[in-house]
Length: 225
Ligand code: DX5
Ligand code: ZN
Image 1 (cartoon, rainbow, N blue to C red):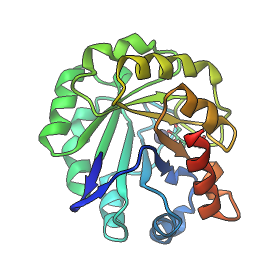
Image 2 (image 1 turned 45 degrees about the vertical axis):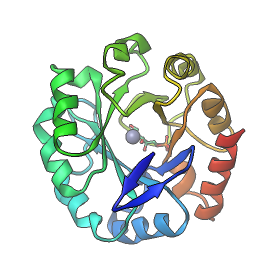
Image 3 (image 1 turned 90 degrees about the vertical axis):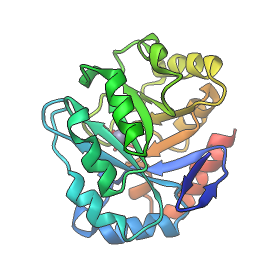
Image 4 (image 1 turned 60 degrees about the vertical axis):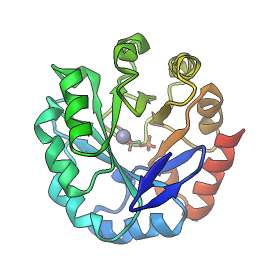
């Protein structure tokens, strides 16, 4: 169960649209739109041009956006040695900070730093990383993100062969938040949720929809299966 400013969000599945696909020239309005359209979180993709071949935004943008919404900020760090920036993102208003296992030389210390900053901690794995790699950390994280595309860009195709990873995690941890990210739409959300995912990220599907509220509702219903 996630809480922001005293409000308990008691839902089984969280919908977290990725603002990577939003209009970057109008980010505040885009965040307000997500809030009005019924999203639970805003998924914020942070890319450094090293861990992934793309560059997006940093803590000052997160901070600038914090005031315009009460949505949970779900920050997905795709950066090398993420421990260096956790405090900055926490101060900027992140609620949940997820970093890549492949990018951290000291995974335990990185989780500890996120917790010490008062945020929920998530650990992400790329498609090529076996799910067993996160097992040593499961009792210390709130969420595992199973990437369903190679990180770096929106608009890619969903990799159904990641579903066994989700299923293995769900079997091991009935209460864990399991996030899927990449290629999620009205069809793929069903398979991901059936495998056990309960935090659904969708970028292009939500932001390209003519009716975003309907798109979010469709994802929520699809994830209920
Ligand atoms: C990719 C990002 C995703 C991306 C998903 O590296 O982590 O969050 O925005 O975009 P879609 O939903 O369009 O695949
Ligand atoms: Zn992401």
